[in-house]
Length: 196
Image (tube, rainbow, N blue to C red):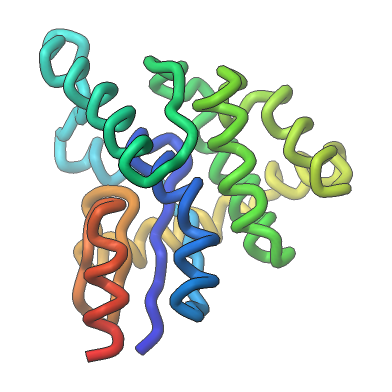
């Protein structure tokens, strides 16, 4: 069965998915469908603030947990905290919509997170987008112009509505039929279920 990956650049734990998804796909022979969406819009509707500043212990735990999990996956351990929350959250994901339509979403997804978490270049910023475009030979001007088009925003909103309709409430989420697997640590469970 097809696995749909609802991915939202701006989610902290999605860093882990961004840096390991390619190797998992290659190892498992996966053909994922990518749907860039706004987890922020869904969480606002639910009145859910994931890491509010007044919950200092939870915020400390989250950053330390990402360090531990990155180390456990043998990924680069990011210097935490990364710039968070993103100032240009929607723009980062609008570029993701364009990249997905053009067939290079996985490249964008991984490179945007690498620049954000490992180098401190915030996803959605001019510097991050320019860096990623240069890396893969895309025109920064063309990509950002396409990302600002109403059609791109319409696709982004449609993806967000599709995520809500199937019951997605966080990112990353992997959907198999009507089954939702939430969190980087549920990717392998989604793969197993899809083959069941």
